[in-house]
Length: 243
Image (cartoon, rainbow, N blue to C red; front, side, top):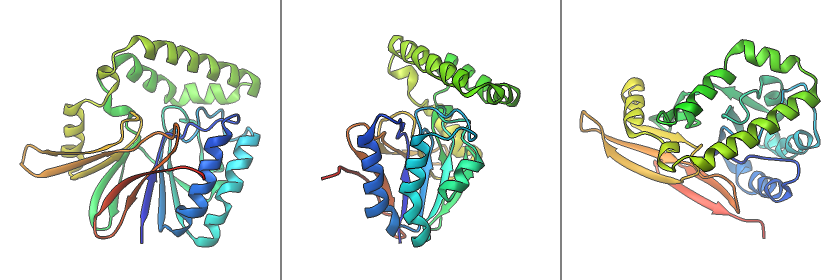
């Protein structure tokens, strides 16, 4: 029995290596798992469920074996694919989960989040999140022709990259006080998230002296990465490549 967590694949049509890594992961690891959680930014950008591409078709095909193995799949939206909807998730055989979500991970209450909302010191980024998650903005965007949506998405990505180059590493990282606030608010002792591309397992004592654990998932640049959780509460961050 295992539960797997991945995030930040940032899939694109021209990155065939990541698609190969994903296929290897599905066939070798995910097919043997009880559940797979994808915690945001599965795609580099998402223009809407109504737009079919070679990439979406390829990903749906890659995930098909999991239906036979009855692996449960859960997917969370990230700041890159915030428009990902239930229609595509159903084709993938997945269930869309909200951010944040609390699950019972082998008897331990665990908070799942993409992680972008933990970076509260990056105020311009937090403002962007509020704007793009506003229902009216999303409705207007989805009503635009596909070509227009793609141009807007590529423009926003270019603008984001330029902005990121001007920011310090610290301001784009999670803020400890916000992490602690989340632990206290949801009354959990374990959190799993992605977004920062800084994999690691972090332990600290909360205000009530209880021991809390925050696990950060890795992106998939260079190789594939997965968090493997087992019923005995062992957690391992593993990397892999296609041989």
